[in-house]
Image: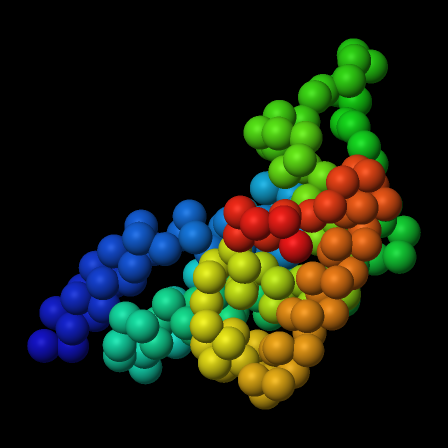
Length: 181
């Protein structure tokens, strides 16, 4: 009997992974700005979700737990990052030729990701979850384990900082939700 229950849990988890891994990876990418690192964070978050899978009962609760786990995983990794580790603009292969990074579809998207990376972790998480994931304030507060007022103020400060960083980098005003802000 226990074996059948375990098999059902594994099947349900596999279905959850298929349905949610793209969204979790995208959230991690928006938090860290690197697709390969985002994949690692997404996988680490899914491992953590799997460990708690038998206790998670409702699909909404699982998705919220997974989203919170991926955000916390990215923030924790940024805290642990070695002071000797330095990001580089381009990677050279063994032959000395530059290997182009094709992860960004447009220059604006790359610039926005660079601007997001300059925000403090909490502000970046609030902006990503509110504007990109389009989550309500209460759900963002629950995911991050903070109050709704803190979500509002962190999002407001993050957007204000993002506008300034964007304007300095591009010379243009930042447009949110299809309208000029």
